[in-house]
Image 1 (tube, rainbow, N blue to C red):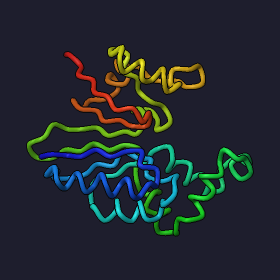
Image 2 (tube, rainbow, N blue to C red; image 1 turned 60 degrees about the vertical axis):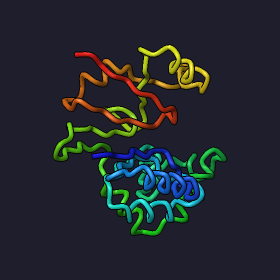
Image 3 (tube, one colour; image 1 turned 90 degrees about the vertical axis):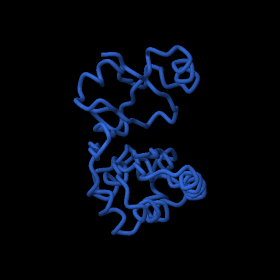
Image 4 (cartoon, rainbow, N blue to C red; image 1 turned 135 degrees about the vertical axis):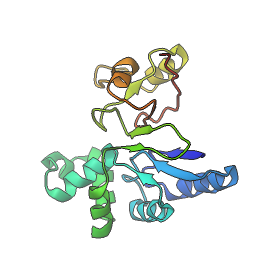
Length: 187
């Protein structure tokens, strides 16, 4: 079984369509969406396309923002601050069906399929979609995190060893940082 893992498309429908076209060429059997598919130029269309795939989906921090907006739990700054303009714009373009769909998604999911090891899919970390994991074993990838500013005191990354101790599954898939990397743990 070949799975494609998608994450952090942020409502970018043309990019998502290009990736899905490539996935079809690669002979992928199914798709897993690890969150953050809202929060960009075409959130409704992106959700509609992802739903049509029938794969597995979880919420990311962008979807948590959408749910906070629609539940009335969003802080006042989100309704006025310039840095939240994309969220406001994106939320105004979602219909109630899309919001209800997002609300039904979980923050994480375990995929257990015939012939495959169980896979835990999270957006950020096993604790929270707002945290992210760091590959502290790999200096080259750590340089990418440093260059992106993700190791500043503002962020609270979670070390791999700590995250892996929290899950029973032999495979953990995460997203959120927008930096691709792989970590193979030794027993």
